[in-house]
Length: 253
Image (cartoon, rainbow, N blue to C red):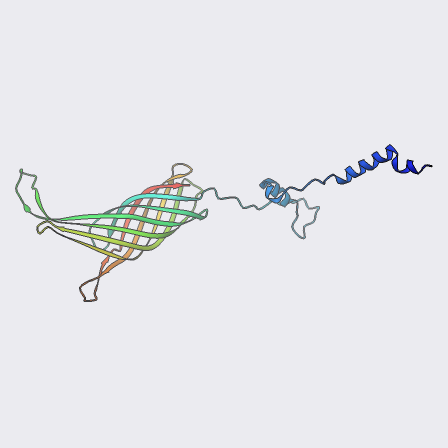
């Protein structure tokens, strides 16, 4: 007589429905690791005490987090002078270095440039206005030196407005010589090449957070050569060991 009440009573059915809804409600999901901000990661880190530390200790353990690099690298544009030790000629140069930071004080990249020199041979005066003494050009020669090197540079400190640094570079370079004899109207071009290296040291003056004015001295070492194409099997070399000075701007990016 009361069996229908046991399974069909409205109050009983409502209670069963509420129980099913409560049991089906999903538990709060934990934030995905990749969705956590650095702040949350740090909070999660400090909540885990190191092994062997008393939970009642008052010492605060902070997260040791790696911060992203504030600068990717630097571009250095410079000009200056270079003089071989075995010669008395001073040569003008332009150059550039482009590097990436391996760590905040260490820069690694490529270096190139252009060193130019020209010289002329003159004959006796051909007359002209008094005091001007014009000369007759008999022969002209030009030299172009182009290096391609890898460099490694270390900035010793960056805490002050002055930033001392040292570096070393090594690679390959080419010397192009061109000679024009105006008396016979003949031309000759020669190319010398071989490995080369240099080291340098400088001081940077900070102009802005990303710009620096640099001055540096360098030593260049190279003995470039070419094979004589006369069947003798001999080789001709040019000694380019020398010193120089460069000034320029350093841009961080």
